Length: 83
Ligand SMILES: [Zn+2]
Image 1 (tube, rainbow, N blue to C red):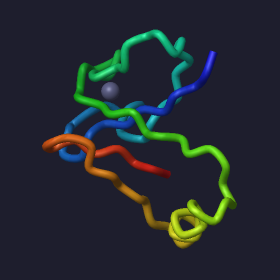
Image 2: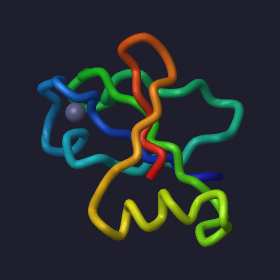
Image 3: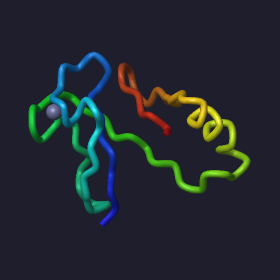
């Protein structure tokens, strides 16, 4: 089963686990988690981008190496970290 990474949303209190981000194994058919299983804080799924090194992702890859996170706004008030 694929591993997904979740993190507490910015501004959410969360616990040590979700504030730092955690990995969870889920089936592709499982619904996306929206709350931390430990503390119930709102969380979002961090998109794990495949194919690092392809030209399309080079910029983001370099940004990550420089210590930046690329955030993509997916819905009102909801962001997904691209890296
Ligand atoms: Zn938590």
